[in-house]
Image 1: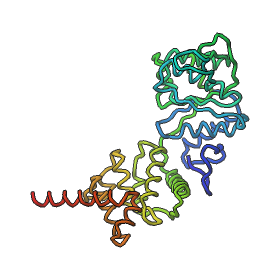
Image 2 (image 1 turned 90 degrees about the vertical axis):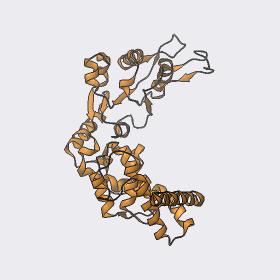
Image 3 (image 1 turned 120 degrees about the vertical axis):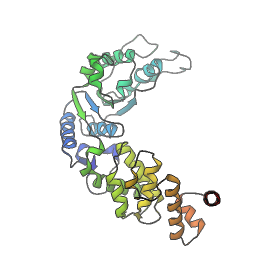
Image 4 (image 1 turned 90 degrees about the horizontal axis):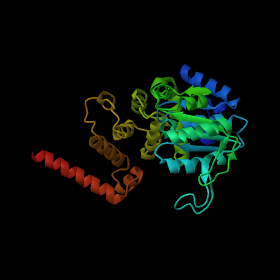
Length: 334
């Protein structure tokens, strides 16, 4: 997703009007999301990890008639059945060891608003049955209580798994699949949206600069080439990490190419050597040393200033320089 021009707003306050795209598949997704926001139908969001499923769910909520009511997000993966029950539906005092007070669950917290269930494909079968009941009737039971409670909740679910295929082979309840997929939104991966990259990168640089109180004017041509050629397996989440780190590491107002080299190599995500320095040594150690040398040059050899620009203590910088010098001497003696 690409934010419109101007200062980037708080992503959790964004509505669907704050987004646009140059990619046809992404535009179709956003058009369907705008239609979904005018209804109370349950929504299923599909997309690879890091494509912005939570952000899209929040934007749909903020664009709907429920915008003034709570948006409650819950990750359904990696919880035991008891914990998941308690988290979703709440519990009474004494319902289990350590339950020293009554606690409202996510359904109750989201009453009148939107409940976002992320990684729903990883939910245990017993929890799926209880979710189905709550979605169908709005009724649920707290752990340790025999009374029924009711919540008016708009459900948005998300997963990076092929949920329809899971339902077809009984890895996910079919009846629940049909209940939660009133409308299905599919987010394309970033590698399929090259036309969106320039605006996305500009938005991330602006946001990172504001957060870090830096003044950044852009990218060196070599840095832009690297970012545009990269496949972004981690999608928007990875792009955010790289740009945030690049702004922090850049000693000047322009992000240099070797900083981007370091960050893409550090992620160990398969950047081809042809795209990170031609025939030069592009191991992380070598790229890091080139960056340190460049920062030292820019700071006139002043180690204290260089350490501050690199985000290191002076003692850590000295240690890294000693270690690198020792490695060089060892190689020369061989």
